[in-house]
Length: 139
Image (tube, rainbow, N blue to C red; front, side):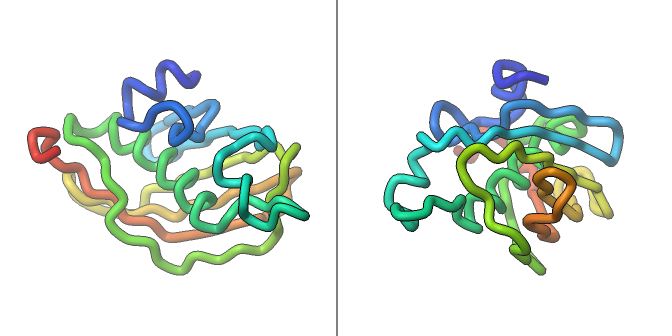
């Protein structure tokens, strides 16, 4: 999926849509993002040496997970929990991120997954995320 197709799966737009590509295959999803260096979240975050904030790395993983969840249900996927988040290597402008999601368990409305981000096959971030699918009329 390209960005236009991803927009059909999740509500994020403009600067908050971070994924460039996504592929879903059952309980597994892979995604890509290129850190351009012009992102809003880099402007004031360590301006002398820009690094992608850990919260944004969690958001990138959550967006891919939400795309995966959108293939299973008609509700709107919303991040419900972040557990065991770990940041191993700094992500900087120019990095090509490979994002991975493996759904572990859940129901139609609530799912949990192990997620990770790699750059050049080096692990940068991991987290166990829970996403809830909510009825869109609640928004």
